[in-house]
Image 1: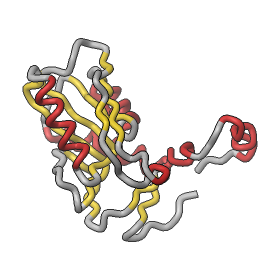
Image 2: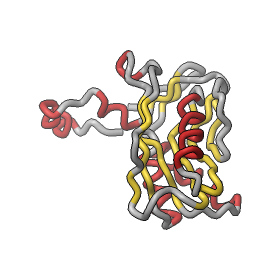
Image 3: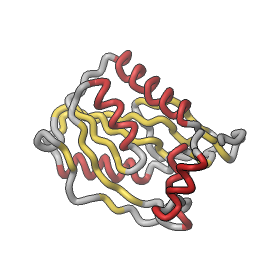
Image 4: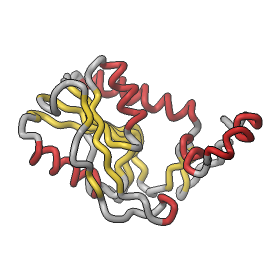
Length: 179
């Protein structure tokens, strides 16, 4: 069940999450900017990138990054960027929309942008789209749905799966544990 949000915590339901993705797609479309590919950052940007890829009917690439491994995923540690990008058509090139769920500190986002520009000079234009942009971020996304000046912890609906283990699935399904 979604809890009340405040300056320190933002609770997002599945319905709100999907609405934000759809509104982000509309914002990108209404900007008039055309792009050739979407590159999403895994894990948080995968769902967002998948929906945008379907709506815009462009190839989706996935770049795995990881920095939130400390303290059960609540504390940022050293950033790892995968060596390869998974994409069905060639490599990232042309106009690319970089997608993630949020820009938190901006450190990951800025490092990924540097990495992409260095490793893929065939990217001619790179813009970014996120659902949430936190106030303390060092990066500024081109498109976003909400700017969060108080930097709350965002409780996304899929986080329930972070603590669910295979041996718990039968009970989980029987209880109908969903919003």
